[in-house]
Figure 1 (cartoon, rainbow, N blue to C red):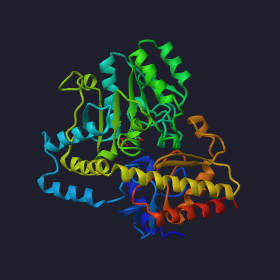
Figure 2: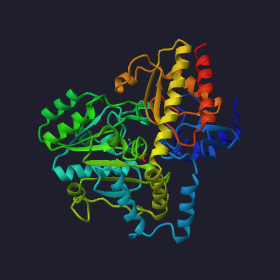
Figure 3: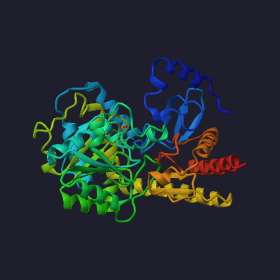
Length: 432
Ligand code: PMP
């Protein structure tokens, strides 16, 4: 059994002063049983907890630590920046450099505004789409998560799906009425919503590869179909690449699938782990943002010099080493998924794995998982057992069936073998 004394004591202390003892619900182990582990440090592929246990990290801060934890190139950039002050609240060269770099890496982005989180990026993008089109409604997909902005907490994924509150109290009926939802991968449902709300829909927003109901891939033609609907109806297509951007390819899912957004939302990765987000897109749309245009959006800490330094180091590295980084991420993903598949076969189990590059999920269901409804056929109790067995064996998975795993380049041969052995033994254990 893992030593837990210090983590348990810290959780008791945290619960007294923080709601639920955590600063983001997905960190709690509610869905998998047990209490969260408190992390003291992390380096490369490993997390180290307060009790001295180590784990191979399969979440990587929910995506951004593509190069593993504390990569030297990002560390050095942050150290170099610190003596020059933590914040100016005035323009700096690094912001222009960051914008230029993002524009060069993501083909659909011509102008970009930095913010401080993925939530801010999507909230601002939807306001911009409304301001630009003069329309109020939007379409999102059941099980997709776009941060905790009011408009998005309708049939949402991630923690709200895990905790069974996909429609949050506190969101007014008025706001909820403007959010229409469709099943993921269902173009007919989208077309129907568009037809019955003719001329009223400002935007369609989606995760191009979903991470937040577990990993779910778009069916062939789904993204292209949405692009055509948006073109035909003057709807702004918002592709939320907070998870997929700079992870699936340097140009994100849009590069992989050859589809262009009108607005792209980005997050955590462009901060190299610092609190950062961004939204960008076509010039004519972005020039609607204040002070160029009338749609207001602002932020004291936006473009923060430390965050920009970390993010620039990360993005330059990904840009300059794209072939080796994405080659390695994809190879690691393939090795893990192939290994888990053969282990499932060995145990006579017919579970579903969805996989793309360095994102994957093992769903405890034999159903194909293509949307919210099919994701929910998973046996979450069994997933909880698998999660706990893996943790005991030193592998830290996302503590919910409805999250994707995110790999890093710090995972080497040794770690891949460790994960596969742990997974095989865990499957054997939980099937007893
Ligand atoms: N969009 C997507 C696709 C996300 O996965 C997330 C969070 N994981 C967000 C937006 C919100 O980002 P943040 O947690 O940084 O606010």
